[in-house]
Length: 291
Image 1 (spheres, rainbow, N blue to C red):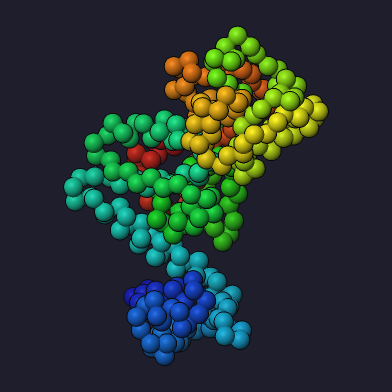
Image 2: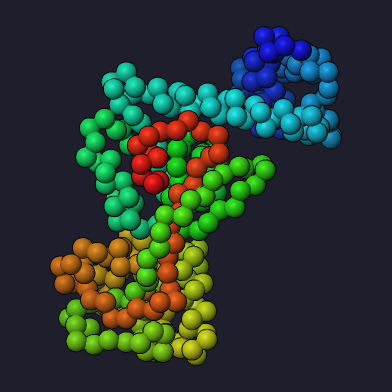
């Protein structure tokens, strides 16, 4: 079979059915009949000389050949989506860069990372925040160009990704200057009995902090557990409690003197990663940021 004999319209229908796992639902989404959809997939199977689906009850499952064809279809139509994303705004001489960020990553870190782009009049930014798996799904579907995270993500055959280490920063204990300007605590021992606000268990550095306290027998009074770094910043600023977080989150408050660093441990660090797909169009401005 030659490439010009491959019907990409049939391949698109196969790809859509494989993603949904149901002919009925796929037919509705594609605005066609179930019988027409079945006929086009059978035509593709005849061309390829192998079955792509096996039926298990009312659900379709991929054969080994179907799995192989799907992996290539993902790249073909994923790159098609990426192409459309690249073309969006190109007519105005703009480069669109679509960045996803896990909600636990500091907004200040994100802004610092994209700061060179804020001065570039030829760049149009799309910024999204959410849960890691949701963002990775959008990344593999080529709706995003890069995802910023504070956890490393291993590559997997079903989701081939490249995870690049961007750097790390120390985690600090900060408190309001009106109470802590002249005081310092040794971590973690000095935290015993103190009121603290912490990142929630979804954050990578929380496990580090808990392990450090357990090893030292320190038991702080946990007054708040917060997913979002922007909210933790507000609590650090307004509550009067001590807060454990990266200094970059409260860089403005530290600079103004509203907050002071009360302590720091070399055993507590937050790592940052940029996650991209392996098969992607290179965007020079993104490559510059990654370097």
